[in-house]
Image (cartoon, rainbow, N blue to C red):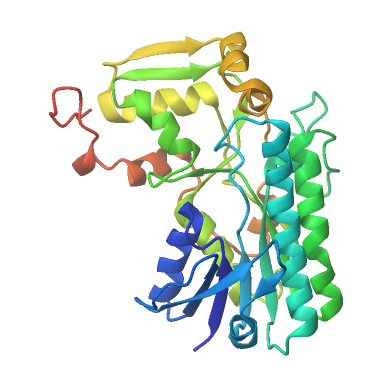
Length: 321
């Protein structure tokens, strides 16, 4: 039985991925700051990023490492302290893994590390219709620099003879957490809240397809290097929000535009990313033979918000189309 070590395994992506891996017969090990009892095919180990310490057994047993750990980018306002925490949590955790692989005898075949499409800047007029490709340089802003430092910090594992895969992840559609859950909150009350002018492109991916990309990166030894983890058909913010509302309530909802100045007042610098338009290409991962279960946003919404599980309206009644 192959063993997969996951960092950040208690987050939205980590939980979904753990469930998929266990279902496929993998033994999963999760590292966290506190020790937990094993259960449901999962063993837990501890690490201390500040002290650069990790339980050696976790590294010794692992056949693959999936690195998801990092402070949530959208969890708090971007103060100077928070921005430092976002970068440090990613860079230091990568450095800890590199050091562990250098010093602890192991059989790790590949490291699959998360990154983000924050690597890319806003769309430009000369951008191909398919969007940014993996060869594009990091954009010189906070998230672009964060992603660059993040990817650079994990890259030394290649010199250790480990196959390295980096997945630059788009907006993850999952009802368990993340941006999609936040988008859904006002929609539950029949208010389609469009951000800014709503014309900014969103490069998204269904949580199931993201999990499958990580598993594909484990199973396919020909997958190596950087890949965009996004669905092949991006949508604008307005299209996404309207389709969510229409999917749940037909035409019985109110569309509300939240102006850019209000977002800037509420969110500060973070509003730049919310209002940024970024189309990202999925061509490279498609060329590996990977097939999306949910290539279009309508297919994704049908899965996430099925007819038999509509959100309740204010009166507690189930809403239908």
